[in-house]
Image (cartoon, rainbow, N blue to C red; front, side):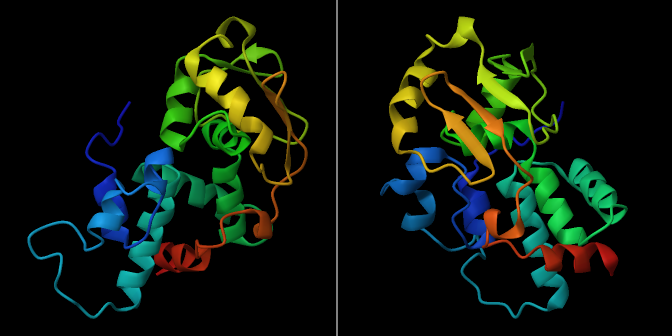
Length: 208
């Protein structure tokens, strides 16, 4: 399966914003964006006038990179959202939020979406009691996500159990820290999804 393998810090620099792709490191002085916020490359420091298309492209890339989705899959998500009733942009973000790897990250079982994707891929989680290793699996209200009993002694989950007590999960998720599990209580509303993403620009990009 294709995946991005280069430095993720340059993605933050390219988008001109912290995307928090490296988990706790992004909150320290080691963060590459804090040390060098200019775009990567030899000509990154030049100032260029950005038109409407450039703004739409950069926002599309930003959303795609935040959730760690490659272009073809992201376009498929958009096509699906476009065919659903309701607001296309909001439906797109909701689909991305309901990916299993994102839900694992939102629940606090991983420090980043990349780590959540790795843990899911290694079969550490079960959905409704069934082991699931597909990071793009779409969860729905009522689904129960839990760390498999045979995996709970692993180091990432020992750490997660300590931090879950202070972790603030979104309102559409309920967490049981003692059992390392959580439930999708409802579909996320727009105000419960990242407010720094402008999904309307993504819709305009694909509708041009």
